[in-house]
Amino acid sequence: MILENGVIRTLEPSVPIGRALAIAGERIAGGVGVHETALASPDVVDLGGRCVLPGFNDAHVHFPTWALAQRQIRLEGTRSLDEALARVAEAAAHAEPGRWLRGHGWRSGDWSPEEEPTKEALDRVTGATPAALMARDYHSLWLNSAALATANGDLEVAGGVVERDGRGEPTGVLREECAWHFRDRHVRPTEDEMVEASRAGMKLANARGVTAVHDKDGWLGALGVFQRLANEGNLSLRVWESHPKDELDALLALPLHGAFGNDLLRLGYVKAFMDGTLGSQTARMLDGTGVEITSGDELAETIVRAAERGFPVAVHAIGDRANRDALDAFERTHDVWASRKLRPRIEHAQLLSADDLPRFAQLGVAASVQFSHAPSDRDLAERFWGGKTDGAYAYHSLLDSGALLANGSDAPIEELDPWAGVCAGVLRTIDERPAWHPEQRVALEEALVATCVNPAWLTGDERRRGKLLPGYAADLVVLDRDPFGVEPDELSDVRVVATMLGGRWVHNAPPWD
Ligand SMILES: [Zn+2]
Image (cartoon, rainbow, N blue to C red; front, side, top):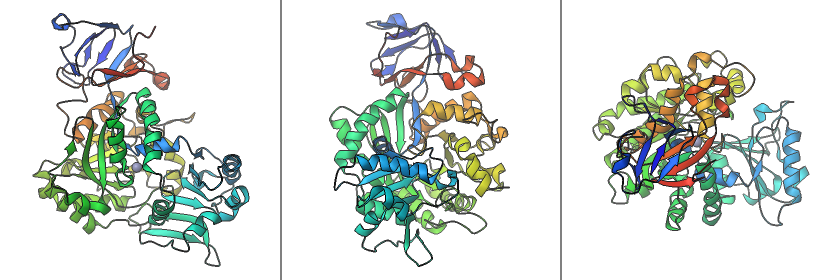
């Protein structure tokens, strides 16, 4: 197949642009514009001036959770407790008797008047139907009385918080490990539910130009979900799957030596958490506040044990203290993982002290960030991290220091929409306001490298995909125009037209006119 009459952006600096692209089977065949005639059956696609980029690789997504969230009560964007309750009331009116009401997306920091959710407020709209509503950052869980009753008082877990009122009664909000413990015991989705939702989610992700993801739902059994989708022929993304640190023994009990799987689905790395989040005010800070989920010593031990069996670690760190502890752990264990050529990463790297920022590049630890978080968290960051935001979401500084940046959505926290992420990285605003900390904007090219090229490096695939070069996988996205040819304020108007995975159209096969 030959794609011609368009702009091919290879993301390889030595041959950045071509006019045509030849594809043979699953791979990119010729160079640019010269080898078409060498192909046996030149099936020609007229790009009509459109632009081709390597497929988008979302470097941080909770895929089954995101897919399920498409079907739950959506509380994103609610501006008051009452507005959130009205949405729950609407869903409650159609609830099936005996089934849980599930929802997510609330963020009390966005509400005015300022108030925290309570079980009493929820009871008024749900009655006796148990309801569990995850916060937007998934680090707090809001329950009603019927839901709380199912736990029989078993709410406390180390590393978590049970919010209590003046009388010592649970208010209905659980945080961190307490929230997750409750969810896992009482409202965990079944594998069938995850497969069904993910089957639809796969198509939606493809429609947004996604050809690969680094999934974070290993703890939820996502490996099995993706395997079932692969078995039935419905896995149309390349998945780099995580394994939870808390179940490291189970992974090490298998006779594996590093990432295991195939071109579509691989179990690749261990995922850990250092702290909570900005929105829940549980990020671990140098001022001593926040929640410690994993200590530096514990992380170092995990890094070593995983590395000895060929697995790198990806660790969630939001606050400046959490990032420092994680960097310290990677530094102490450097010989063990670096000698095995493992590619560790810190997820989010949201708030960095000036002393720690250069350490990502120095140590060779990647910053797996989410460009969308900066503009969507700006108000909360100004409120909770006032005076420190110079080191917050410091993407340009990280690039300047030589750090490797990978971009993800953290869906469902932000929408699984890499193009929106690219725009957020370049513009640093998602509304009418001027850019937030404009000095931390990244160039379009840098945003695309973080979205297409670097995630492939993190999975050891830098010579097989992530760029549009001969021999690489034919994973690509067709955009309706060349984003390098539009004004910055038009960038968010660019649309995905079609998506190809391994030489096969997985979204909107041509012709397009
Ligand atoms: Zn996440």
